[in-house]
Amino acid sequence: MNLEFSLAELALIISAIIWAADYWHFEPKRKQDNKNKSAEEIKDPLIFMLARLVFIFSLVLVVIRFSPDFSLVLAIAIIVSGTIWAADKWFFASRRIQKYEQEKHQGIESEIVEPPVVEFSRFIFPVVLIVFILRGFIAEPFRIPSGSMLPTLEVGDFILVSKFNYGVRLPVINKKIIELGNPERGDVVVFRYPENPSIDYIKRVIGVPGDEIGYYNKVLYINGKMAEQQPIGDYAAGFYNFKRITEKLPDPELDHNILVSDLQAASDFVLVVPAKSYFVMGDNRDNSRDSRVWGFVPDENLVGRAFFVWMSWEWKHWPKWHRVGSVIR
Image 1: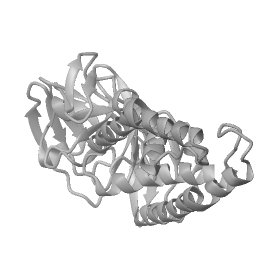
Image 2: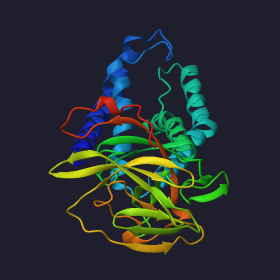
Image 3: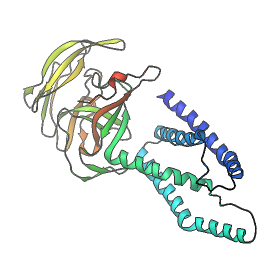
Image 4: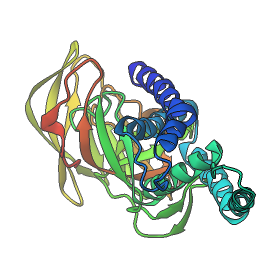
């Protein structure tokens, strides 16, 4: 992650320099060389168009790094850029045009110059608005930073999370406004970590409200029914070797793969999941900090259901192309 954001910061600086150089030097020169053409006819060189796009993209990455709530940053950016753009469109732009017409009538050569802050706001407002809507109501991207969900999700997987499976929530305040459904056993869900809501976690739902969950000798029991296990073979992850097992959850019967380690002692327990809460576990059962440690996930902490791997790339390694397009189950 350090490499990711150091590159983002470098890209931000370089693209900002290119954009500034274009605005203060090359753009006026293009206009001077094309006096007889309208502003729409003067095309910006590809490098300057790319610099603007790189600036926006790298700015988003840097903001994500330093901001505890990216939705709040997007909302503020929409309000600020929209206000500047609207104020210029309905007030200041007409004054610039009026001044230009007066100088033209007086025989004074001049041009209508849009302030940099207005140009930037006009460019960034629709981009930020689209990102805010898609991220807040449709799907949100996440990157898997650890191996707690192996073998289902690997370190470096870039996933998409559906934001409407468990109800429509208002971004920033995370208030549910429309009920659409609830998590089911077996769903892989993203949620705000109960002990620190600024951190997003991803785990598998094992117990829904009212379930009695038992765990004996690394075997799950849900409402008295055993989750059947079928050994597949060994699984190597880093310096560790695990046993790969297909686990079938009862009611409804859903199967997925998990990892267990003979080096870790079993931690047996039995509990009942309270109302409006969920019991979650990582598929890497002996290498996951989950509900066994910090308790249940409240319904209001839910973010969405993970459903798709759109890229898998761990820094300093080649992308894992075979994982692109994988459905999460």
